[in-house]
Image (cartoon, rainbow, N blue to C red; front, side, top):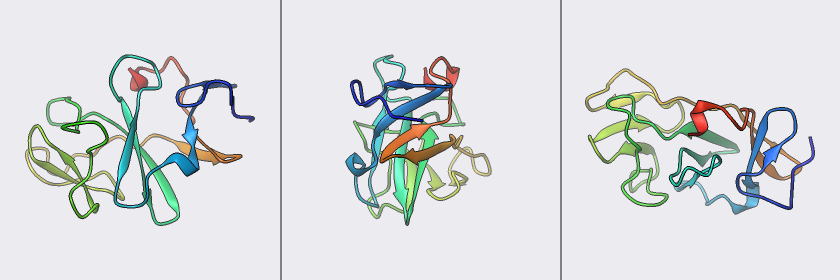
Length: 133
């Protein structure tokens, strides 16, 4: 797959994939970045670095279905070890997405299939997927 460099940050890639950004544009470990790949006016997915991996999650709390962040790109705890739902106080393990504290304990965030291709962070999700809306 060749990334579409004419429209990065949400460009549709061939064969049902979505290019999010150059992987070098992701913040360092302990921070996250949200994306609006479907252009709906809110970040519906977010990415974070964990060691050598980049993880991408659907921005949707399993408790009441609300977005997790309280402001742009604020998905993680101060120490960068947990994903937080600022609406309900749920804490999720950043490596697994499992809720470890709060009203949805035992439930998980939805991890999205992603990979790095030629330096671009790409979702293996069709551009018209409801997960991107």
